[in-house]
Image (cartoon, rainbow over all chains, first blue to last red):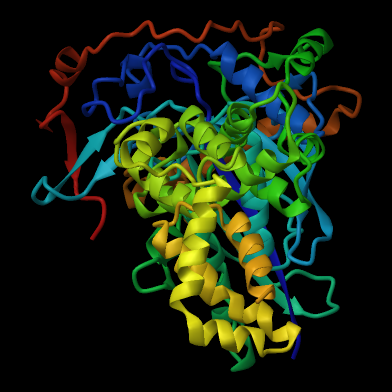
Length: 490
Length: 94
């Protein structure tokens, strides 16, 4: 049977505020346990939550970025459950009247087409603390630093039809929140995490199948892998005459499988009710308009602008704008790389190739983020400028790049120090070419006796020899031209 | 009338321990409360916005500033068990 896959994602993005959603405690990551958990976060008797203005502003920014409705009134509710890292016995969240509803975003599918995915709602809530199960003997240690950290939970419509689409949607939301600067997007630190609701149904059916919820998928790769496995598992289950049980499943990246967490199932009765400690949020059209005028450039708009302004291809511009950090780095590098006042097409393209190629590869090899790169925008720009003005070849540039990466100085310093300057003096090149021709009588003979269409291939040998003699410094284009000229005559 | 099993579930959700012999009493009392509130169902409220808060005010917002300093020592002096800065609780996973 043909099955249709139905996926909805719930994404939790931590809002990048200084203080917590309802208290004045700090939100800095990695602080010593419980040093950033005040009386409000601990839920001590008599405390009252007071809403952080910045949290409201950030949620509205997100709503505007996804063309959503931002109702004039929004309400906080208590979601009741017991867990040791939730000191109050309830989480302050939103239920009936979320701050953002009915938005949509466009994702680009593999075949290049665009699909619109609905965002049902985005609501504000507080994060819970952290349980540490190891290192405390037969007890559990609780760190409440994270308790009360502001989150926006973004709930999609069940519009996604494959693991790939889910991955593309998640990447798009990630790009939007980081472009807006409302979330640092750091998945290792848990600032951006995702749960997936997955079900399958016979192709053509309108009724949804029973779904399972996959928890805590904290990388783009895991989301796709976990969903792919879950689809396979559900298909096997149904095709062998079994049933899908509605449950929560955990993805294990080491074993590459999902497994049931039945123990959490029994008490899914949160008994939401409006939080009497918090008054409704009222949002005026003026406030929304003020935020609208200060919105930064969003991923789609930036991709289109960069494509046009720097004359990049659709593909290159979308890779470059996949994160705000990369787009920022690209634009400042391209400007630094350009020797004239206006941008030139050649160095813009060269910059894109270097950032997507050598530079990204070096970051990956060393597991570094762009902002921690030892080669900054100005350094890379200078290197590209030297390729562009023929001081060095692209090949030598790789050597210079590695030296810059290892902290040996700027491009100009390294080129000077190592004597890597490209030889463009035609007299010097001619001497090298003559030497190679004189030393390669049999090859010259072969070249001259070959038909023209074969000569193109044979010339490679001579170019290689000349480049070797120049230790890579001769301008390859000049070498090629000169060789063709010299080999053509007797 | 609420069933005994409803009472047990409500008690469990609230983590209240109630004695077996008390459940019929709770069932009667809670059912009476629900019946009282049920009278509201006879009133036409179709034109009334559901009330989220008895005060007709909206939320006062605070600026995003860190105002709380580290008071861990003082706060943890109330806790029954603490180790290396963590509050200790019975193990929550098997």
